[in-house]
Image 1 (spheres, rainbow, N blue to C red):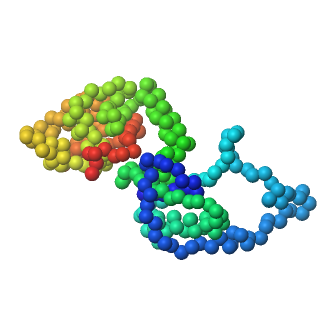
Image 2 (spheres, rainbow, N blue to C red):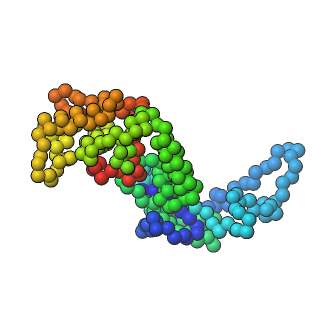
Image 3 (tube, rainbow, N blue to C red):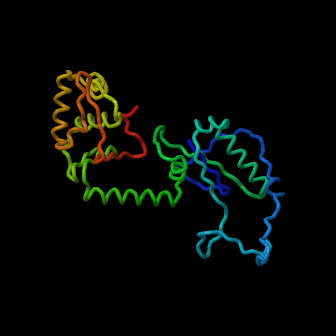
Length: 261
């Protein structure tokens, strides 16, 4: 979980306001009493700060700046390691803002993401709170992946779209074959025995396959993977394992597959 602090309240469906607890105030006196920087000897005198024109970047003609957003990337576990909480960080930032600019209005929102989604905390925050630059970057990345689909080399295991491409061509896996491959991919590097595959992929079905049937499913899957079939490796006497190669690309949405619990 991560958070963002903005002096101007905006409305976003993805935001969830968090209850905040009191925290020690951070004094802004050190900032206000800091000695002014001295110009080097012989340097041209600079205009007093009050006389300088305000500099705000990327403000289009006809608009004015009304506030700012500070994206803070930190989850609850990292905050705990640092000896604090998200609520205390928010309250401290609010207190500091009140010290520096008493007229400022603040609004705090907590950015939520699926557990285990991965990625940099601050990037997750920006996407969850609909930051335009982050959204544009995500769209550009999606366009790049679409272009790669047109002339790819190697194996693309696209979990989000439930498909496998071999050198740009669909592998033609059945539903159960894809589920079998996905189960192994999401547990990369771990050998899965046949009983675990049966318990997870055939749970609740009337006909439960035997270990020999599992071997048949794996053999059919490997045959469809053609010259890339060694990504599904047989561990003799144990089960099967997915081994990633340099020419294998795995794609999945920010929300993990429901298969991964």
